Length: 314
Length: 299
Image (cartoon, each protein chain N blue to C red):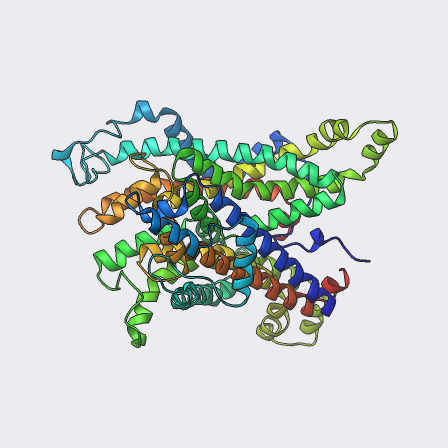
């Protein structure tokens, strides 16, 4: 298990470094001088030179990459040249809003998706099953930004039930929750269908296995067979999915944050990309990639812990 | 025994590709009502894309200030936007953009992915590992984030947008082809061919490629809605096609600014995206059951 864990973490670090090298290389392929682009055409040469030096752009590329990675490991992500604030501080201000949004979206889609999938599997070919089937296929592919805009139109503009902009006043829990409803609906909707579908498929497989027949033969009530013996195993595939989900969820939070004018990692990335603010962009992308890769490692570990075949195969 | 790092790589597990014939696909779609609905929706979108210039009642770029913010009516069935442009005409034109960007960038990434996948699958181990590491690194960027970064670097244009899609899609196809190549590499017919003295190029082109192209093509067509969504999404964020291109994302973005005064713009802008994604997904769903017999058995 330890060797397996070390291998996975090592590989993840390698992927992180390759990703950063690619990001760095790409930003430096840009024609023209970064500092001039950021400061505008009227900047004085001294100001440009100072910014170049501040951002370390006067050094060779490999040195820049090594410095960036070395500093990032120590928690120093550099300074935002536009506001002169620490990038790490800016990211820490924005990250909680994104994490809360991801957690809420995942939470409600699990709470709804798993029972739906479970019920569809038990009552196979019933109305609920067929309805869930069509609903899952339909919602999985629906673009989350279209969902977000439509709910904003209905619940904020027309019905005036929910607040449309921002993340709410800090300290006022009720207000913050009201601000979370529409974004987390938009981000989570596709996952309800997806989870329902996966749980249904794996439930159908598990329900045919010997230990379920044994449990039934012992005369256990069906509800107990389902909840204690079938669902526990059938939920496992959704765990593996969770890691892959994080990448997709981060993408849809970018839209949700944009539509509902919420602060967060997604807004930070899009805004710094538009301003070509590379120090902030690089670091926030590094954090996004880091979240995704750590999620994959954690789920790999959980799966390896639950299923010994995975770790002995390596 | 220790496995190569490629076997424990990040990314979804990929099953080997089964063989598919065109006739079976068509029969399958015909017997499935949702598949048929999907086919009809896809046909509608393709029809709009092909004949947009003839069907459109107005010039999608023509600014008509006196008619701005007209609600849907007989003259403008989906209303007009802030510049008085006919939204229905813009949406028709937008289907052209969506399809051209979607189909052509998928084809390009398939060609590149095919080449890289064959190299990774058939080439030396170190090259395979290096390529897989690069694929995984690209894969570890959330799609929209990678798109945003590339758009910021290269600037917004149709070519950049296609470049972004190619960068995002290529690793997926390359991994698929690699897995298929690895599976075929040591099969008896390839060994027989090799023992007769055939070089790697002949083996790859004559024997491995034909086994991969069909399924790859179908999987690519299932990616079309995702790519169209990505195009519209990046444009919506202001990172995609620059105005005045009537991309569906642009129509949504412009409409969202006037959502209180002219809600019909966003409603109209969302419909083609919903129709397209539903159409392709229903169609792809009924094709996928055929591609993946294990899934067909369970579901």
